[in-house]
Amino acid sequence: MDDVYREIVRIRESGGRAALATIIATRGSSPGKQAMKLLVLEDGRTVGTVGGGCVEADVHDAALLAIRDETPRLLEFSLTERGLPGGGLMCGGTVSVFIEPIVTPTLLIFGAGHVSLGLSRVAALAGFRVVVLDDRETFARSERFPDAAEVHAIADFGVAMEHVSIGQDTYGVIVTRGHQHDELVLRQLLGRPLVYLGLIGSRTKIVKLFQELEESGVPRAHLDRVHAPIGLDIGAETPEEIAVAIVAEMIARRRQGVDEGHDPAQRRRRPSLSRVRGGKESKKSKEPAGPARKGRSPGETSAGTPGSRA
Image (cartoon, rainbow, N blue to C red; front, side):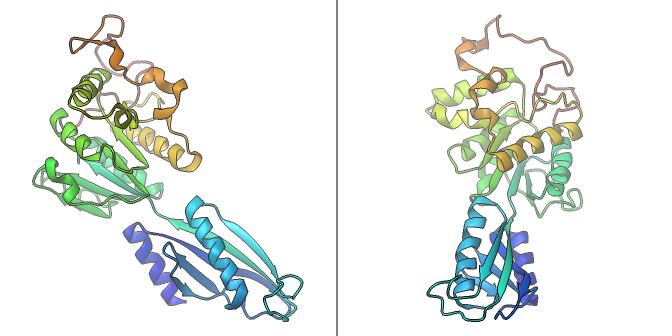
């Protein structure tokens, strides 16, 4: 059983996927005993056992389904020819097996400023494996981000993707210290199979950036997947509050399949290129400057406000 626990630790640290099946109850005669465990990895490999035979085969298949939909399962087996026809079992007992998915999503945070500090802490508490990248060694330090699994001091944001990989449970948040760095990272992430991609900044900045990207040949469909301004609109002002809003939006995407960036009903708070005239927003869409105001998304920041990025 120690091998099972060691493998679970390895999977969590690496951001892998698996499902743990545990016999939680037995009655009568059965090959599997209470507390026996079977760990099923995403590729079908296993560690441990729940007694073998056709029961274990069925548990194995159910575990793979649990990995895919991140939904626990409770299976009941009657170990008789009637309960498992063709299984060759004549034990006469019953077995209850609980299957729990082990899926640790990875959050890539590009930028190591004030928002990133809070985001790393909140995301780790919410079960994300956090990876932080910045081109400043004084900021990108493990001591500064104790909750992060990895912290990378990179030479340049233009080569950020040389330091990380993207799996099917990867989320990305761009909160660098400047718009040029944001664009460098965004260009590398657009079109990649991220579960979630968010970009911090003001609506004016995002409209201008998206227009430039689209004019350079970036498909509009790729830009539509970006959550910008980032985070649920909860009136967040401080870096820590913005971090909560961002993680809340990621959780909604993960647990409910809710993606505000794709919901037409929520488009009212997303930038529209149709309102841009000559690289500037029309008077109709122009917004007042200044500190946080009612209706502004948490990830919409301007220099000098608490949400700005050092």
